[in-house]
Length: 251
Image (tube, rainbow, N blue to C red; front, side):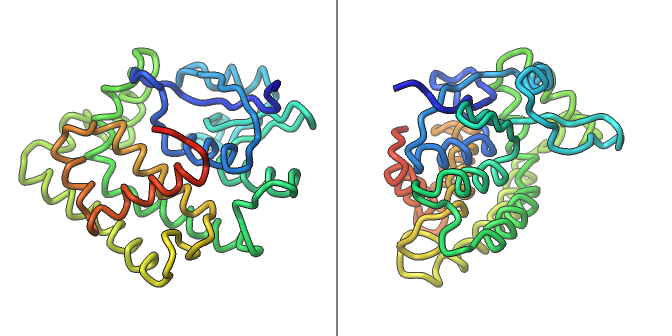
């Protein structure tokens, strides 16, 4: 069957190329809805060119307040000609345009899902010093240089200087765990495996995408992953397995 969508993603050096927390959200959405797509892999420095070529708008302005910021995930719908960016906007478009497919914002929960996704992304920040240096090492050279340079500028110091001792690593892991402690409190209010109980939603894609992200960055053998995988009795690894199963994704 011919693909109905072009999905723009950023590759890494790992065999299956998938690593980005943001693009994972869209991948989950497409799979859950059963929508066929082809992946166009784009290195960081080439995202703007690929987006312009395919009529995909910028997501926002860069920090200079002038230059347009193009990003992934982006999606082109071959059937309608729509060209979109941002995982939340893509999910909302697909729910509205293809109502015969399973909704990722069930029961008119769009507003709550948006709020959850935004708050969750903000609360990831304490983990960046642990994650970003590892990400730079798994990217292909063009993307690695871009990622290292832009994140170094954002932090005001080289990425390798963000965590310089075991004590700093342990303390940063404690701060990062604070996000997951909050998630545990929210998830524990329902009986099912998902945030909405037995009903899967975009919020679960957000959380599972983070798990995929840190696993790709850190690797299974790392001390950070081994610690993370035990948090809350291994709940987040199990949740990701449930999301993978619901979406028909392996690995």
